[in-house]
Image (cartoon, protein in one colour):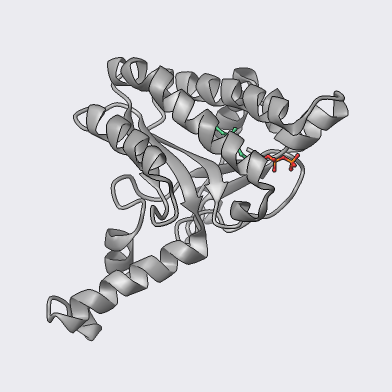
Length: 228
Ligand code: FPP
């Protein structure tokens, strides 16, 4: 969801305005995803590196998230959306953790769209957390070193419930992952857009989904229609 700050500055508005309009695009994307059969949707809301931002901006982002959770919980449950927060919880405030627990518990029996919100999330941090869990299982004799496999890493990962993303869209003009889903993105299709996040409307999401459906994915194999 990159580009909120630049979008607002270009309009002569504070960065906070960009984040507020950004939230509207989040709502719109969730609507599109749950109506068009997308199985899982993950938003990179706050990275392990975002703690380096000025304190007022950090507070605003957390406040927006808590406000959204409060405002949207029941609607998400009614829409059968299962909400999960991924990332580390060690540095989150007790109020934030309370909001997370509230929405996760409320939607626990929903089996429609799986909505992941990455909060204090970093791909490298996730890999460290996975390694620690595996090391712990080995140390208590639950797992043997020889049994460690890609499946074990998947099992202990933050996306064990939904698998890797088919498509990763980054708005805002930069062409990098910035520590997003490093383990899971091995075969994801990547789409880097110059559109700033507050301009990423449902039409643009549809367009991206449409382009994605035309891709032939070989996963290192051959495109069978090309084999002569
Ligand atoms: C990137 O824009 C955006 C973020 C770091 C935060 C996005 C978070 C929200 C909109 C909060 C709500 C989220 C949910 C899931 C309800 P930027 O600030 O890096 O923009 P810039 O690159 O133009 O400075």
